[in-house]
Amino acid sequence: MFHLFGKKAAVLERRLAEYQRKQDWAGLAKACYQLGAEAMDKGNPNRALLWLGRADTIYSADNAVFEQVTEKLMDDCSDRLGHLEGEHILYNDVPAKVGEMAEALGDVKVRVWGLLSLARLVKLGEKLSALPGCEMFGKLGWAVDTVLKSLQEPLEEYEFEEMQELCSALYEFGDSPDFWGLGSEIIVPGGAPFQVFDLNGMKGVHLELEAYLDGHLEMVCAREQGEELPEPATGIIIGALLPDYYVRAGAGRLEEVPQIKEELERIWSDYEFVCSDITWELTAQRIEAYRELDVLR
Image (cartoon, rainbow, N blue to C red; front, side, top):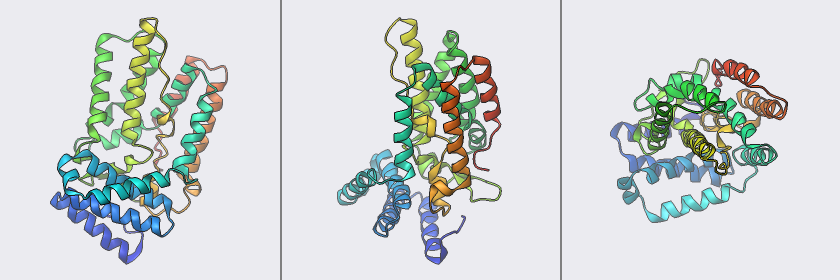
């Protein structure tokens, strides 16, 4: 693993790795909680949110783990996470700002704004798809193309069904040790390895992907039946920020991380783009450029 926090952190990393090796998921959840509680007590809300969020994900995903973790620990973890929701940190402030900005846009423009961010996850998804249980991330490029197409013309039945299958795979992924237990990772040149569990931040990138794509299918159905369109999901708009990765790798102030600064600039630039007189041709060109982008470099 990538040691960035001195001797004590190296010991904690080895402990986490040992729990993963033994598949001691309850031990892993407790260790994550301890790291988060310690970070919070030391006034580091980003690291607190990282580790407490991981603890919550693990014991919430597996009934056997849930039964082995004390109610006192889970209650305290929940209370701490609730308190952290009120902190003025990137994890909270950026989603709130995006939500406010999206309210001023029409339905299609919000969906295009989200689609542009989704396109920036294609390259990462291709790399993650080689890891155990992560095959579905290799279909993000197809999903981008299909959503863009369906904003202009009806979906074929097989495309609709394939998108449903992708949504199910993304949703179920959150309950799998392939996500939160195995510690699977990919190499990032010049940086710490990216762990699959680094997708956990911002309510879970995999869940935001599922919410966006499933919401899109609901929109397609409503449009075909002449019903009121459901409100578009906005969580995917910030999906490529990936703050958990940078916090775990030792970042201090997230707003000063070069990759996050660049991604924020892209998010705000995309907002200006969708506010303009966009065409499908211009949208496709922007998406094509984003598909080749490695957001971690």
